[in-house]
Image (cartoon, rainbow, N blue to C red; front, side, top):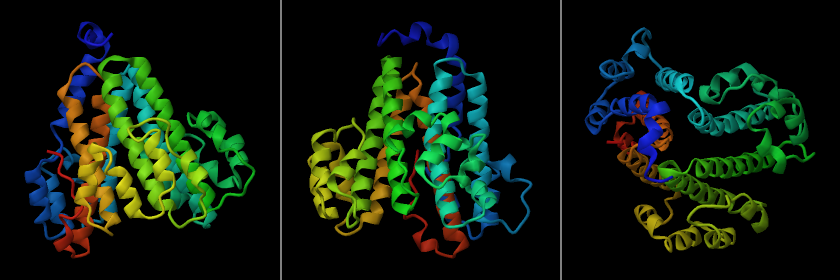
Amino acid sequence: MYGFEAMTFNIHGGYLEAIVRGHRSSLLTAADYNNLCQCESLDDIKMHLSATEYGPYLQNEPSPLHTTTIVEKCTLKLVDEYKHMLCQATEPLSTFLEYITYGHMIDNVVLIVTGTLHERDVHELLDKCHPLGMFDSIATLAVATNMRELYRLVLVDTPLAPYFSECITSEDLDDMNIEIMRNTLYKAYLEDFNRFCQTLGGATAEIMSDLLAFEADRRAVNITINSIGTELTRDDRRKLYSNFGLLYPYGHEELAICEDIEQVRGVMEKYPPYQSIFAKVSYGESQLLDNAFYVEEVKRLCLAFEQQFHYAVFFAYIRLREQEIRNLMWISECVAQNQKSRVHDSVVFIF
């Protein structure tokens, strides 16, 4: 019952909520980012990060450093924190935490299948997979040639199995089919995660419905923009949109018939929460749209910490830490490639 979580939440969730709020306080601040942006080399970045919680993960790395090493070690810290929380969690929090990783599982499946299609080495692809999305049979994805085999041989025993019901066809896997598969899986995943959060009720349902609706709307916009000029029909495009969110259902109807980014802008400006996002993006600068969405997402994730006795803080923390790793990757790449003039372009300040 909403408003009464305080009576029972701390019995099972109090310790972990305290842990995740402690982790949140260790996120890099605007001052940290300003210092990182002044760095002249990757070793300078390592030296600055040694004073943060990333220090123990980077301290034994020899010079010369690579951007991939920094990202890998920072991701390892996130994975260690996640595994600790998952080990300590009881139901229904443990299931909630597992749901957070399903998106990474989908990305890993798509990465392996796409890489295999282009005859890349499986071990090289496995190294690029996100550690939060790994599962036992992931290496055998390379043997599948169509969706049906992919499901029957590999994915039937994974948490993604229920999401494949809409994807199973006998068509051979090609780049177009793989991208449709990714978006169909994400649609099923987001809808399932949203239903699960609604069963939890209370502040968790309220906050997560807002965060997941934003994710669903962002994916709808990205699908629309990426499918402009392709052979994807309007009906196929509409099928890839999630059946919830602020844009559902009327916004989806309008997005499905958009034929250029200015029409997408016209649709989105009818929805006040998204007006500010598109106002920041100049005409013809669709590449800045992702960054504008990230900025809005970070604002919403930070607001999740303003309430207590709910599970959305775990989702928010994982997402904020992933955004921090994206920031560090961008800064490291700019420093490594001597493009310091662009270093502020894609950094999203969290605090």
